[in-house]
Image 1 (tube, one colour):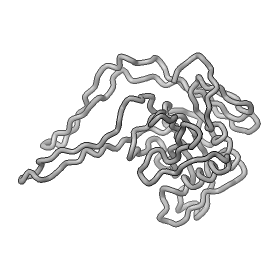
Image 2 (cartoon, rainbow, N blue to C red):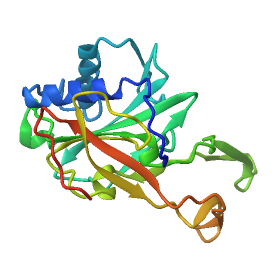
Image 3 (tube, rainbow, N blue to C red):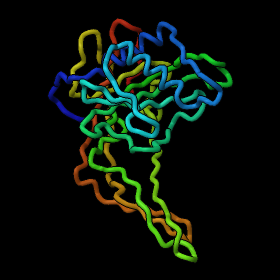
Image 4 (cartoon, rainbow, N blue to C red):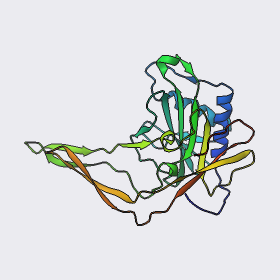
Length: 255
């Protein structure tokens, strides 16, 4: 994500972010259809923001990735709603490891926090929101997620073990300080913000010295161990800019 050259990226991310900010400041609430709706209420709220922009998009099916893909722009959006107070430092990635590029599209992640349902009732506000490019979470574009299996387990040798990988990644609220109670957009530092937006700071992430390239699970001891290699392509920093709209009170503390 690092880069000195500033480019004008053909993206709807700034408009989508602005639509979210407008809805939050105007008091547009999340509507929970039922008490069993623990996943899609914030996603439905975000879908309405996409309709506000007028952009053409496709909505993915359950367990598809990302949740929304645009028709005329090569980008997609993955939605993560978080009840607050509650779990905020990590989130589960059940279908794909987080990344900023997938199937020829830039991928953005939208994290929205809201009061716990039992405390808020049927309708509740978005407390804070982070829309970030996926490279902020993971800059590796080469890994391909696949689930595999092995046969021959058990006393009769006819049981199959499925290796269904699930990932747990940090949220932006755990990576950077000063995001609580704000609306923040994080994009690659090489992207130029359009008029009406003002950069308020940079966040630099340092890549790991060693990379996990495999793991082994011992069925006798129920222990798991990682196989690592030196990150020979390690870049000093991956930098993202944090532009916010200058005509709105969306300031945050620089990390």
